[in-house]
Every structure is written in C-alpha cells, then in structure tokens.
Length: 243
Image (cartoon, rainbow, N blue to C red):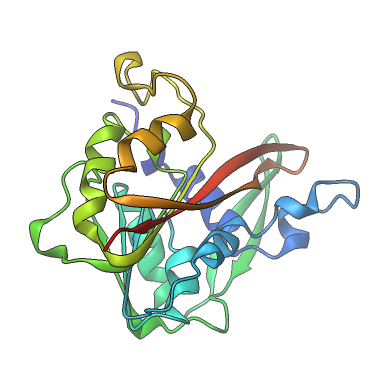
C-alpha cells in the first residue's frame, strides 16, 4: 500500500490541530520551555496594519486558526490549503463542537485533548476550500489582506505563487508572508530555491508591485511528543500593494 502524503496523515492532522488550538499547558508542560513560541497561528495575522477590513485570504491555512483570527476583523475570510485532511479538520472546528485529538506522550502512550474555537471567531464569515497555491481559481477576486504563513518553502514552484500576489492584493492592501526559509529538495527542487537569502529574493520578486513595510522574527513550536518539539523561527514580512 502506498504511503499517505505527509499532510494527509491522522498524526500530522492532530499535531497541527494542537499547534493551532491547544492550550499552552497541553502543548508545553515544561516551565523551562520556550513559551514565547506558543500561539504562532494567532500571532501572524496581527501583523496586518491596514485600514480596509472587507476581504482576507489565508493561503496555506492548514487547520484554520489564522482564518478564524482574521474573521474577528474582516467581513469575509477565505482559507485555502492543499491538504484535504487539514481542510476537513478546519471545517470540523468551524462547526463549533469540541474536537478531540490524540496527543503523543511517548512510544505508544497517547492522551486525549479537547480543542475549541477561540471566543472571538466569527465562523459564519469564514469559507474553507481545498486548493493549490500554484493554481488558484480565477474567480477568487482580490483582497485587502493576503496572509500566507509557512507556505513558500513547501511549494514546488514558489515563484508561481509570488507572481500571483499583484492580482490578489488590492491597491493599498497588504501581504503578510511568514516563512522559516527551510528550503528542502523534498518539497522544492533545488533549481526553484531563491538565489541568495529569501528576503532578498522576495524583495526582487515583489518590488514592481509592492512596497516593503516591515519584518520581524516570530518563533513557533510544534509538539511531537511530551519530550520532543520542533522549535523554529519564521521570518514575517509585510508588503503594501502600490496604488
């Protein structure tokens, strides 16, 4: 039997649900741990500082936390992810019912954790769909905000997505990109990697249509087991669409 793609496994779905919606103590029970890295999916949307709040697009939305965070401020939010598992999980969270996930302690020992939507979420404003960031549907329209967190370096052809931003972001709107710059050949062929640093590459790709606004480093933490975590630092940049 063929192995399921990594983003379609039950284990990764549960890891991401915990990453997005878990209580701090369920993710990181160690007082010595990097607590400043918690809540990443709720933090990155906060880097939008534009005035217009009509439409937002969350690309690579995974299981949806950033989309729900944006729903507190926008009249319409579209969340798109390539993984059917992730989109199904996001819609289950959207139902408003508590979601139970299996969290690894060690070896074959798991515990059950109940997850809920943040109180600020306006679920009726959010629309989730499965889609390919390389080939978005033509009738998406444009947005006051396009938010894409930890997506670029997981694409086969990141330049194809970057080329679409000028049409997706309204004049005066903003683009919020977060990437840990962890370019790997299992996702992106070497010939499609940036030539030089990711920020320099983004600047050259976006300069014709966007003004650079700001950059900041945002750490994030994904729990694998009670004693093993992925601690990573994502580069978050904000760009404003030229008039």
